[in-house]
Amino acid sequence: MFDRRLIPSVLAMVATVVASNILVQYPFTPLGLGDLLTWGAFSYPFAFLVTDLTNRWFGPVKTRRVVYVGFAIAVLLSIWLSEPRIALASGTAFLCAQLLDVTIFNRLRAGSWWRAPLVSSSIGSALDTIIFFSIAFAGSDLPWTTWALGDFSVKMLVALSSLMPYAKLMNWVKPYQPVRA
Image (tube, rainbow, N blue to C red; front, side, top):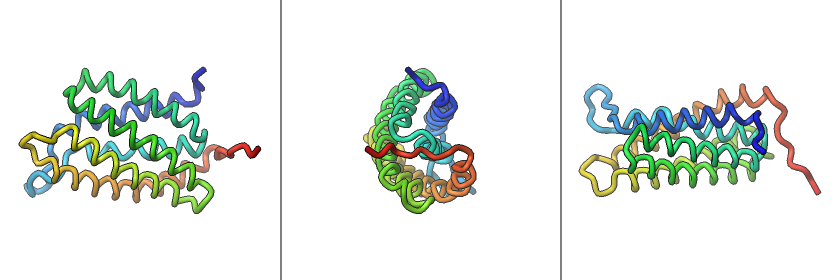
């Protein structure tokens, strides 16, 4: 049975991924500096904030459920709203990166409040970037390696800037405490 308390996390995850899959198709060219990254770079990193807050509140088992349900819904919507190759790349990258994020976050949860979200999001973002851009754009004449580097840079900036909202939001609900046997 699906825990209804997870619905906001699933909805936030789906909205973030679908919006990012649409926005990744549009280059962001600040001040005419060329193809540095896409608009999707600004929205997707919030998926890691959703995952980390869900993991803090509900633990890794329920967070994995959010990832799986969010993955299924987001891929179906992305096939309809963006290109199939983008949807495949996104789904593959999302699933691998978010599940890795859940695992790393859970192992680091007992340390400093900032360590688990920063380290898990950083490593997950690196994996996500490599998988997504390799599948979505490899073999095309698009400047995807530049987009990937720009995307990863933005993900790192968002991971750092997400620490403040994380710190504020993490206190709303009692954190998950693993059951000790």
